[in-house]
Image (cartoon, rainbow, N blue to C red; front, side, top):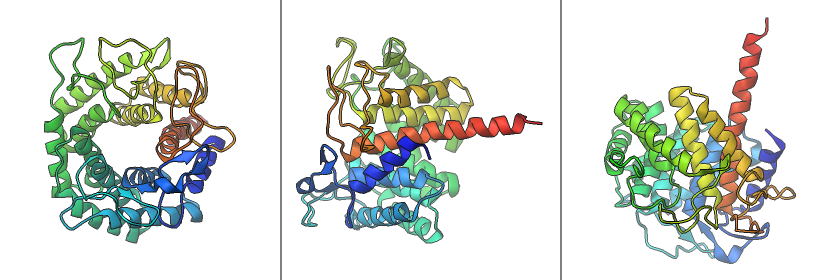
Length: 347
């Protein structure tokens, strides 16, 4: 594990307690009064499940996050999102992004969890909420990422297959205008999840047309979100062709979703152009961005909450730190693949 990734996981532990993962931070200190949310805990499950070897401390954290997401579910498959520090839900169970991310986290843990009982429990919890549906394209996309993980390990899993099929249909094909093929009128947030899901569904179901559509959308998005050789991601208010560039504030979730999609594209195609994209995403966190400043706190390992026009946010909340971890994991995977390639070439 690289020093940067090790430091980022240390901050994730700093942001967690015996209940779950605090959503916000003042600097590097958790804001306990803001409580917890499934959105972030589910992201935490994803990055923990991706790690091939967890320390005892991180293994216990994965168990804690699984318990949190399970507690958020209701019998219909809907999911609560916000839990106060008093351990009371402050919202009604629903099917927003947090529902989709819960399925993403559970599906990833069901496919990659280190212990059999954790995989089994995560799969049973996935199946509870996989029968639910959301009117939100993004929420369905997050859920489909979890479904793709499940389908990869359990071919023919019907709830996962249904989610994959419905989500691809909800995203639709690229628009006919090559200047704006995007399926929405504006870029919003976590944009790369849409082409990534088309790639995931196409790979899972053997649909080459979906793979072609996903690659076309991702190639266009990469071009739009690149400026002077570095990433210049969609700002928090979204972006369309009438808006100027660069836009601020930029958030780490955009770079992380691109890294996820680039990694998926490389896995599907083997084209090294996508590995270059992953390195651009990691470089964005290290300062190769529109203002030339790192979006990671070198002292704490935390991911900074935003890239402003002239400064970086001092706060290091859960979403930003998880985005940093996710991106560094993809970069680490490239390094390991390169090292293995060199070993094979040695006489």
